[in-house]
Each structure stands twice: as structure tokens, then as C-alpha cells.
Amino acid sequence: MTNKFEPTVAVTGAAGFLGGVIVRTLVASGVRVHRIARSSRTAVPGTVRHGWDPDRDAGPPAQGLQVDAVIDCAAALPSRVENPDALKSTNARLVQGAIDLAARKGGRLIYMSSQAVYGRPNCALIDADTPLAPATPYGESKQAAERAVAAAVDDGRLAGAAVLRLPAVVGCGAHDNFPAAAAATLLRGEPVTVFNPQSPYNAVVDAETLAVFAALLAKTIDGFVAVSPATHPPITVVAAVEAIAAGLGCKPSLRFREAPHGAPIIDPGPAIALGMAPQSPASVLCRFGKMLASEVHCGPERRTERTASSRLTGDAQRQSARKRR
Image (cartoon, rainbow, N blue to C red; front, side, top):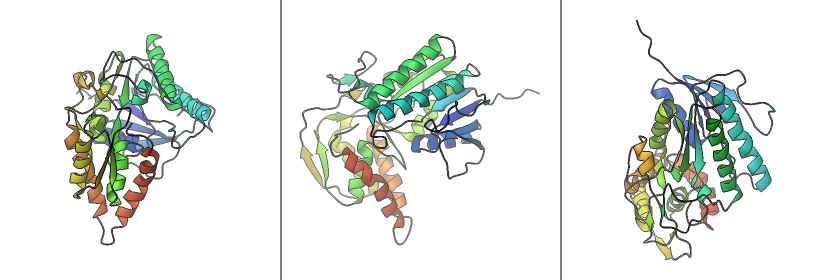
């Protein structure tokens, strides 16, 4: 009788939006999961939780634990850590903790980076040849983390690593990005300001699709690779807002403005070649709207609408000075 190999995977930032989606995806596929988080108020059947706070705990996460792969979703965000030095320090400790955990068994690491590593590129398309030029402390911290991950592969500590330079990630609980801010405004029944409405847009990915992709890479990636997940083919920015509104079942009120800096589209080809399922931005954003609509209408007093709206309101405020991530 042969035993089927079941990899053991640790997910850092497991109490967050994306980390939680990845944990549930892994558990559903039969993977043994260890959740690494500062705190978690919700028990997840089929997982083991380990508390670790890089600002409080001196040592690495889950000392003694050995896993086959780590999916690193932990990050200090500028919306929550305003001091640039503190943000950089925390993100440096977080990635070093993930590298240490994955390296104990010479395993694999999937690191969630950001499009912020590109800064404001002066190009129409972000692809494999686009240089990294972060323009914010957050982007700088992500670039430094990518270098640390690549070095761990080069020196043989890791069998493989994939860096995913994330655009906006959507799903229930999404925050700090353009679609979440637009959805919050639509939920409040207010006009949505759309910058550069006819510009092409594909800088969005569905959290569940991303989770399946990360789970695949955790079993297959060898060496080092950095890719940018995205949807395809691009649609206009105004069509993106209209897709969210269609999912919510509302007619949007739109205000158009031109901005000096447009955002380039992203080439998802390298990510698709590694196994990411291709999706269109319209379908992803409409589904996102439908998810939020199901929350809004789940109770007679529409208590969830207030919860969803308040959760997203902060995103709209933080996004008012930024066109999109």
C-alpha cells in the first residue's frame, strides 16, 4: 500500500484577507496547514495556529516547525504603519521569518510582493523587462524582501521561490485598492470619481484564483521566479467600475477626470505560463460586486451593508489621492 504524499504548508499573515482565502483553499484540497499570525479570533478546522508578532517576539516564527513550503502573505501596510522606518523594519523581519521557516527543510517559498516595486513606470506595459524603481517606502520594503528571497534561493537555503507582484486583489474582505474603494463608494450611493476613464485596465486578480495559483507553486516551483498576476484582456477604467456596479445590481453615478499619470497594463503571460488560470477583468470585478451584494442583502435590516460599507470606507478615503494601485 502506498501513501499519498501530502505537503505541509505554512501560511503567514493567515488572519488577513488573502491569507485566509489561501488557508481555506489549501485545507479544501487536503493540504496540512499551519497558520502563522499575530492574532486570530477564528478557529479554522484542519489547521494548526502559531502566534508570531515580529514587533514583539525576538525569535523566528513557530520555532521547531518544519514544513514543505511557506506562502508568505504577511505585510505591514502604509495605511496601518505610517512611520516609514517602522514599516521597512517590520516588513524586513516578516520576510526573514518566512525565509527561516521555509529554509528549515530546504522547502519552497511563495512571497506576496506588490506592483509598488515598479513605482510609476513610464511605459504602457509592465512585463519581464520593466525595471524596478519603487517610489514609496512600502515599495522599497517589497523590493528589499524580493532580494532577500532571491538570495536564499541562490545560496541553497530554499529549493525554490516565486515572487508574486500583486495588483489589486479582490474578494470579500478586500481592502486598500481601487476596486475596494470604488465598491465602498457605490455601496454608499455616492458618485464614483473615475480618473482617465478610457485608459486600459487589468491590474486586478481574484483572491480565490490567486490562492489556487499559490498552492500550485508551493508544490512545483524550482529556482527563483518573479511574475505579475493580472487579468486579460484589458478593459477601460470606466468599464471596470461599471462591472463592479453590475455585480452590486446598481446604476453607478460617475464623474470623470483626467490625471497626469496613467497606470500601465500588466502582462500576465509569465504567470499564466506557470499555471495561473486566466480570467477577464470584467468577470472578476462583476463577481466581486456580487459577493458584496450577497452580504448587503443577507438580513432584513441590512446590517451587513453597514458592515461591508464601513469596512471599505477607509479604503475609499485612502484612495482619494491615488487613482489606483
